[in-house]
Amino acid sequence: MKKIIAIDLGGTSVKIAIVSQQGQIIEKWSLPTMSQQKGQLIVPTIIEAIISKLEERKERVEDYLGIGMGSPGTILKDGSVKGAYNLNWVNPHPVKAIFQQEINLPFVIINDANAAALGELWQGAGKGCSDLVMLTLGTGVGGGIICQNRLIEGSSGSAGEIGHITIDLSNQFQCSCGKKGCLEAIASARGLTNLAKVLAKDYQGSSSAYQAFMVSQTIDAEKLIKAARAKDDFALRIFDEFTKYLGLACSYCANILNPDRIVIGGGISNAGTYLKEAIENHYQHFVFQPIKDQTQITLAELGNDAGILGAGYLLLLKESGK
Ligand SMILES: [Zn+2]
Image (cartoon, rainbow, N blue to C red; front, side, top):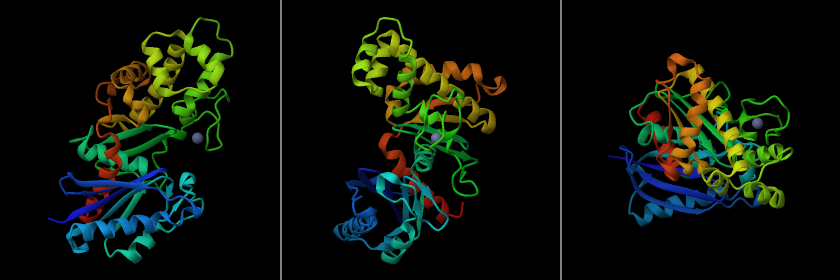
């Protein structure tokens, strides 16, 4: 059976994998993202890596169903990517056109958060579900929505931008998108520092996390969650606000979409059950009560492989006409 080439493009590295139609990763490797020279070298380097891998495996393009790719930024209808600032692709970059010139295979491309959602649906926390929302908590907050096994892309490809729901009206939290009060400005790695700045203003208690913050003026997500677990007062206050806004955002997703699962992934989700339960406690208060138990919050299961598997799955869905 033909295999799939799957690519997960990130700001510092590109992960490439050969994936079976059943979702097994047959071979996986990575290379640095060549984002210099306005990102012009990124795609040619990936194409070169794929061609030499096929030679090494003594395979031909005909052994493959196609190529699926996940990328940061906004994906346009013609397969160009724009607004991927960490790749230096500010204006539309014709990713699909370059691939199709060099490799004669079907090619699909989606936003990386959407790829992660599809990956979890196929092989991870959403296996067996038809409706799933994924929130990726990292430097920012990514979102992906799947309804009835279909990725919701919206009229211009920007559906699922859950990170930019305005969730706080106090005007204290500046988001990278230019707006204030976005979920991402509060419930991401960057958002934790924003929360700490606001909460430190009139903090009176005793806390070593507070003292450390007053010196560094930044919050490290992993350390913060560890301190909250150890019952540090200031860390607990930040953690409670952080999970409150996430619980609120999850309730919006549940009320609008009623998915089987809301999957929490990304680096911050490594905090595991402690984080999940705290979000759940807030979620239970905010959500429309009849769906409280139907739409469950779960942790992602695939870690770094979610993007690769999702990109591969999208190609499989498109090629099988679904
Ligand atoms: Zn925003």
